[in-house]
Length: 241
Image 1 (cartoon, rainbow, N blue to C red):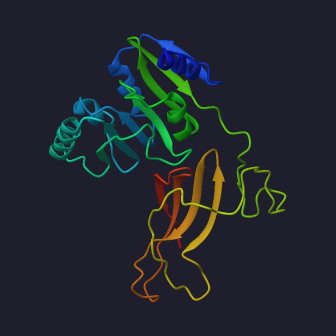
Image 2: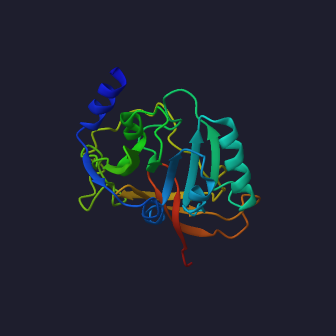
């Protein structure tokens, strides 16, 4: 009884709720339009995880409480050449192993004891969770964050005042994500990381991706677009000059 009450209480969270009778095939076909981090709760059907088309722009992480299901999923993904962009791991406890605001999409044919508010915690603002309940697929959208501001110019915005309206800013107390380049180059006066701006959950930066072996190697400046919440690279463009 307490489990049923808790589940119903979670369903009343102040999130957009839509119940549909769509087939599972359309759930997975729609998911490949999402870049970033996708979490799949359940490893018993590895072919469905492969349908998410993991790759450089889409990392797929599957979890299950069944050791054998996790093993079989890993073997299937390895045979398909998808290990790396896709992986499978054993789920323990009742929390997902992600920081807040780091997952773009959660697909859960089975919730496996993970509360919906825990899934919602890990979603990026504007992210989605799609889970099955009583044979119906339910979709929830995490509302955009109204206390996170964009930094669209070198000095915040066109006013150049270098002060944003973000209300979550504060001293750093943890790492959200880590990615290359782990080492920077010597430019005498230019930094490898030249500039960064953000807009609508995306981080745009100018990086020198030339080898770090010598300062004499000509720079290779790249404009890089990432997901600001988990660092997944959406695209790169070589800068002329």
